[in-house]
Length: 75
Figure: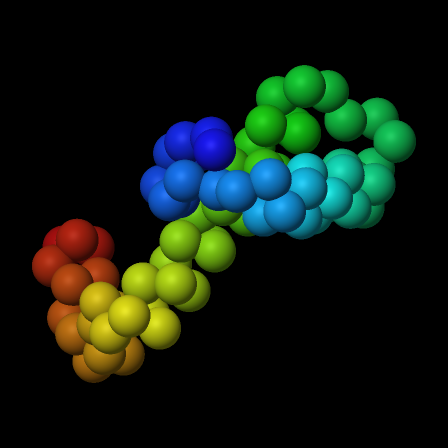
């Protein structure tokens, strides 16, 4: 099993699924991308998946709470 930032240990089947998702993501990128673009896209997708999992686990905040936090940050 392999440890990936923000993810639990993956078995071989999960790793194959993850690799395929990364390949599919890369195929959707424009032809003129560089390594940084690829890493950024993978990192962004990983953060989205972590956030969605946290929401499923009840770790998210309400829309109202998010708006209040933004008000503080945007002062």
